[in-house]
Amino acid sequence: NIALNLHEYSGQLVFGLVTGTLPVLVRYYANNDFENLREKFMMLTRFSLIISIAVSGAVIILAQPFINRWMGANYLDAVLPLIILRAVSTLGIGQNSSVQMLYAMAKHKFYAYMTLGEAIANLSLSLLLVKPYGMAGVALGTAIPFVVTKLFIMPPYVCNLLKLSKKKYYV
Image (tube, rainbow, N blue to C red; front, side, top):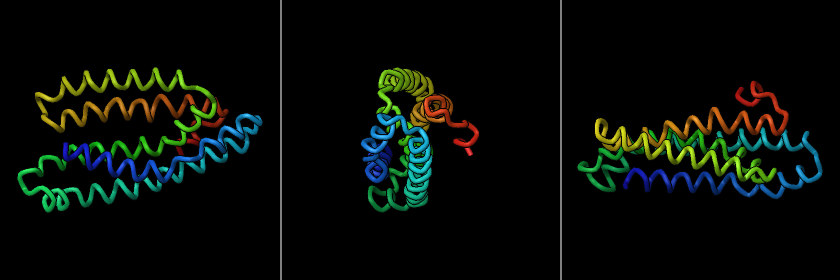
C-alpha cells in the first residue's frame, strides 16, 4: 500500500502536467492536418518523457530515505515494489501522448481492449509471482504487461494511424 500510494501520487503529478492537449489534437484531426498532428504528437511525447523521467528519477532516488523517515525501517520492504512500479510508469506516462491521440481519433475501442488484456495479464502474472517473490512479484506482474502494451502494442498502432515512422518515433 505504501509503494502503491507513493507511486500513484507521483504519477498524478506528472499526469497533471502532461494532459490537457486533447482539444488541440482533436482540432488537427478534424481538419485532417496530419502534419501538425504528427508534430504535436512527437513534441508531447518528448515532453511527457522528460517530465516523467525527472519525477520518477527523484522518486526512485528518494524512495528509501523517504519511506524510512515517513514510516520507519520496518516498512522498507515497500522500496523495491515502488522502484519497479515507478520505473515502469515512466514509460507509461511517456505514452500519455499516444492515449491522447487515440482519444482524439476516436479509437476508444482499441484502447479499451488493450487495457482489458493488460489487466487480465496483470492479475494472472501477479497471482503467479506473488508466492515466489512477494510484493516485488506483484509489482513485476503489473510491470510486465504494462511494458508490453505501452512499448510494443500501443506505439506501433498510433504510428500507423498517424503514418509516422516507427523508427523515428522510437528514436
